[in-house]
Image (tube, rainbow, N blue to C red; front, side):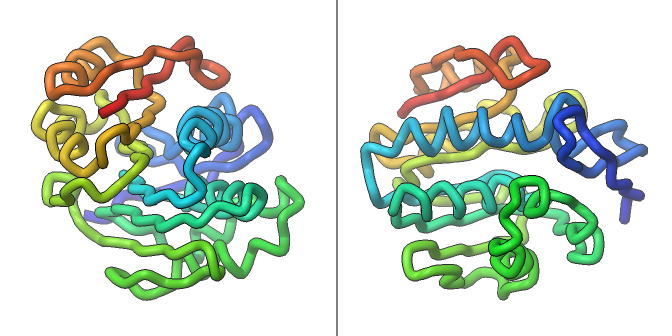
Length: 222
């Protein structure tokens, strides 16, 4: 079933996508850009920046904002990144190109890279730069099966209210297996049931200040 989607502006001026039937946005309405920068870049990528070579798994490619910000930060920090992203319901480029990320960040030079992320081949690593390999996999989260492969997971699925089946012990067991020892999972969610599920599968949990509009977020360490 194809759900109707609308482009909307969030409080920091950046745009996101709203799904009326789910009453859900792809990012926080308090600021799409601020949320991604805080949760995934500052508290995820930079937290793991002691290593100049990182393997990243993103759960929920969505608009591609997290991937774009990772590409930009990796270039700035001279990091080598191998980036895999999972998406069950890919957006069409004609919708994504209505978003204002590259213009808002004054990063028009990344427009070509951003389009490549959305239009490149699936299931293979695409070289977006000499130090950034990018792979998309069109699949359900329940079918993810990796083993000790990633240093960092961006867990950016729709909220537990909308898709509770994606925030279970079974799913987090799969995420735990996917990480290398010392690997990190970050998510915007700090709901009690989610934190208990993360702890129950073996993660060491850190509750840290959230982005604008959220008191807390979660960082889980293997």
